[in-house]
Each structure stands twice: as C-alpha cells, then as structure tokens.
Length: 307
Image 1 (cartoon, one colour):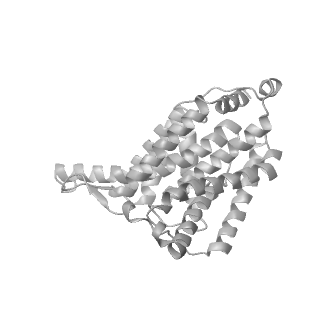
Image 2 (cartoon, helix red, strand yellow):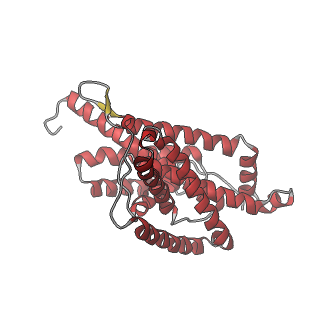
C-alpha cells in the first residue's frame, strides 16, 4: 500500500491510533459533560465548547502566574489546574443555569438559541481578556516527550496522561450517576420529573448541579486540551459539532454509547487524516455516521426515558 512495508504500515496505524487516543480523550470528556446536560436535561447547550475554553484559559492563567511568581511549583501546577478548571467552568455553568437556562426547560429550540448567544458572549469575553491570539500554557517537563515502545513507535506521554485523566473521570461519572444517591435523584428526575418532585426530590436543585457538573467536566476537557493544542477565543466552536456527533451517535443518556462513539469517531478521523486531508477525513466520518443513523436513528445505545 503506497510503497510501505507491512512493518511500516503497522507502525503508521499504531502512531495514528495513539494520536487518535488524545483526540478520543478530549472528545469523551467533552461528550460526557454534554451527554449529562443533553441526555439528562434535554438542554441543547451550544455554549458547551466555551466552557471547555474556560478550562483551557484557566490552565493557561495558572501556568502564567506560577511561572512568574512561584516557578518552583511548575512541576506540580498542572494537576491543580485541572481541579481549578473544573471549579471555574462548573461555577460558570451554575450561574448560567440560574440566570438563563432554568427559564427555558421543555423549550429545546429556545435553549439552542439562548446558549448560542451565550457562546458568542463568552467568546468576546475571552477575546477582550486574553486577546485574539491563541495561547498555550508552559507544560511541566514530565508531560513532554514520548516513551519509545519500539524502534518505530513512540507513545506521547501527554497523550497517556490525558487518557488516564479521562479513564478516572469516566469512572467517577459512572459512580456518581449509578452508584450514588445524587445519581439516583438525577435518574429519577430524568425518568419522571413530576413523580420525582412528588416524593420530595428538589428537581430544580438537581437540574442546577447537573448542568454545573456537565460544564465542569467540559472545563477538565479544556485543561486536557492544552496538552495537545493552543487555545483561542473560538477554540470551543471547533469541537462542539464533533461533541454533538459523539452524543447523538452513541445515544443520548448512554454512558457506554458515549465512550464507544467517541473512540470510533476519534480513531476514524485520526487514521483517515494520514491518507487524505483532514477536512476530507471529517467528511467521510460524517457521511458514515449519517448512514448508520439512518438505520439506527436513536444511536448505538438508545435509552428509553419518560418525561
């Protein structure tokens, strides 16, 4: 194939696969937050990418402050910046739900327009505060470089770290949604809001914290994103379409569907980008998803819920 030996082809697919792991990790973190908001609450959050950007800018800001004032802390700041990104994006999500979203439940098209307007406001805020140019944090030395798995395959350390973060976050979300009392209240509200309220569940509080959690996870995705690319005011819009594709293809409110969908889309795009251009790789991936959704319109793992 194209003059490559079998060993070279194997190395190429392995390297592209590892590159796809980084994209998979960011997409999955983004999609986990969006699946919670869209799947559990029925809110079409077009500003989800901007909450991711909030986490990325938080990481950049902490990096800059650490490098300027306490450079000895540079090897450790990134772990703390992930928690800070979650808190900042989650707080912004909490405020957005309280000020805007709570007035628009059961009006999905209105939530789409309102959050689209919110995304434009957030983009302009980033542009005013951080400037129009893309920025990148200074990563600690232990995130740099690659591990030589073989003579032809190098595994990027930052990709493995982001994958570990994604696995940890996914397990934490699974525990929260399916093993905790809070998750039970969320699922009860999703299945039957009226009955959940009748048995004493504060559904408005559940909605608020659920939206904040989804935005907080997007903030963590932003922190992870800084290890593979720079951040600009419109960075979030580049990933929002792919994130919605992941959620819709996997099946709304399905954690396992979200994981399978994010992995499939990321690997398909990464491997195709080696043989064709990035835009054509996205086109082929999108066409494949459309064809599959024609036969399975509710996604890979559809969940039946009652509103």
